[in-house]
Image (cartoon, rainbow, N blue to C red; front, side, top):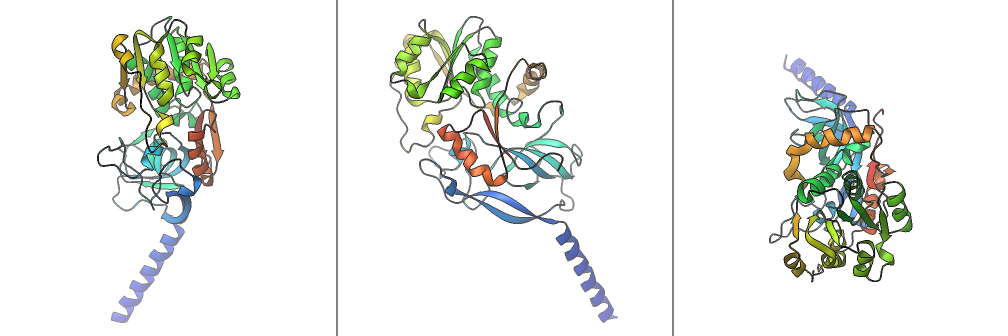
Length: 368
């Protein structure tokens, strides 16, 4: 009797092991090797292969997803640095030996939550890998509108789009005829800020880092003027050339010397929306700003923001932007590379201006 029970138990364990093996697949991950000092390199990351079971644990109320797109965003650079207890970053730092994480577009393979089912397409905040087990759906949003490109949900219909909307409309309240300057204007956010401002009736100038990008700002996105900041020896003189009467609204993406020059050219009661400062992200010693007294004399309002504080405005944002996308009244440029192995190069390329438009990594196609 004991022998029969033992044999049945062994056979049951073997069947379970075989089932587990059939439900297990390889899973490539983008892992941070070490904390980054200065400019990030591809060698600061590596692509590792692990195993994952493509079935949710019993009683889980989370999701198992197959990641389709990874979103490369400048804020991720701060997460690669060693945590600073005195100046904590606004989002948790990456940990060496663990996968990077960020916004992804994914397909649900298995669901333990009643709001999601197998086959749903979602936007989630999860690890940079081929498959993810998401224990909580707090940061998962179902994609309801599939008549637009899926990749747009990490760009114009995602965090960058909301950032442009909040930074321009909520922080700066543009008016018809006002003069708007956008730095890093061909990035995921900047290209939208300029178009939103044009739709409001503003005069818009953008800056970028190559002739190709400058031409695109004017020809594709409808900016009134654009210039290559790398060719300008005197940023103050360049801004005076394009804004002889001064700047009403500055959408700040760069910081450093650009911000200093802008402060000299702001009009009375101007507004500055501080979205990012990409020129400072890789510096061990940040550059100082010298012309802040202009905030007082010109009564300029300068305000930083985090888009997550405005999540309640997402329905209002979608009501405005979706019709513009569907009707072709707003353009959006993406820079998509294929394969998770391409992710490290794609991410660090943001900080040298290699990307043209919103940078994405396509891990898999949604029909696979």
